[in-house]
Length: 360
Image (cartoon, rainbow, N blue to C red; front, side, top):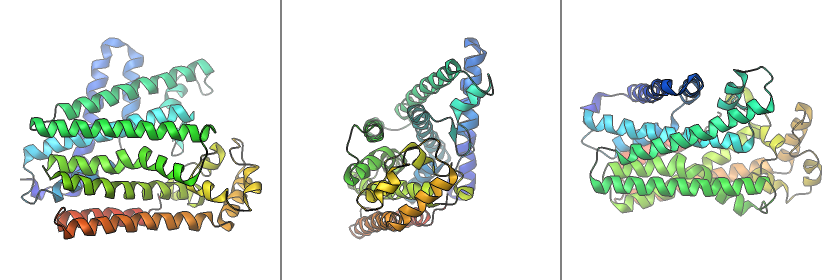
């Protein structure tokens, strides 16, 4: 039985299966040329070694929803699905980097940047086009792989149908969120707070929180009512997580979170922070340099101070607390009505506490 399997053991096993997936693809790629092999090997370096937030969330809740414990066979099956959830995440990151034109992620070259630098320290535009195209194509392959993984799950026909329906809705909503996010960045859509929050919910919460929570409920054969409650909870937690991410990018310690400091300000990213600032008298002075790629550290720090002075930081921190409180309220209701067990509720509350105290 897997009752003796520790959280650390599960993390190690998820990582091992994830690495194995990429190793298999790299081996299969050998007949198609060295560059295709290099693509898979480079992808493995960027897709592994992370925090595995989504697969761990899925596994934690699945175990909480299975009081009798998971057998080794059930654990093996669940890890396979957990890895598919992580592959979906990596696929979205690849496409997101192409859309944003990014060559770095967390202060090191992303897949696109790494592929380009393999050819030249200062790659030509043609090489960058090839590297970006590689990211698009690999992202497409990983989306297909995740879908096939759900379809091949060792489960009843009804469980597989529910998993696939969930995955389809997840991909649809995430693409809808990304579509609106690009429209916001390009000025096609008015950047009001309501639109920005809805976009964050669709783009981040759906696949990062709702998917792993609901997938766990499906695999545990929980009632549809549990899925409905987990959808509400996942949306609140996911939005809180994204709002925290926005705060860290502007106000956080770059040494702690590892992201490019002030990258959101340089890119002109429309966040709840900026939406609030637009409604204050500080906005004209902030707008002058917002979205300037060559924004200097001193100027960015000045913008950060102005955003803090106008109340944008406190406002968004308040939104984070609102979302966490809403998640706790839904969770308490679900526990009271018997939709979710106390063990499951505690598992989700631990997640909420980690979001509240995030520094990276």
